[in-house]
Image (cartoon, rainbow, N blue to C red; front, side, top):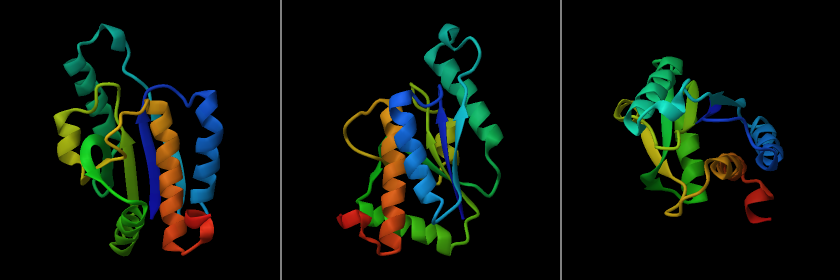
Length: 157
């Protein structure tokens, strides 16, 4: 199973890059993993919120493959403990899912079409975080889940 992290927006800020790279590298000891930064549409500043979400959604749906398992990070999604996340990942691996895509949408979220395509909507917290920090938290939590699956000490260190 391959894990992909997709995010709409700019490249990782320097204060986030080091941590994201560290945890992504650690994840690759368990599953192949990488990041895809989906650029904002041209003239994004000139578009309405609805039009921006629609354009971003078209790009996202264009990148997805039919068999991809899409996990949408959404503040209204289901919250999971670290152990539940580990179980969730293990279940996807057991189902022989080839690629799990964790998607961080744009500033206004994602289009309804992307929400409908998502297999799962996951909320990291009831708190709202800046998109850059969500990248770091996501990478760390997926690494933590991998270490739980293998019963390694990171989760309890």
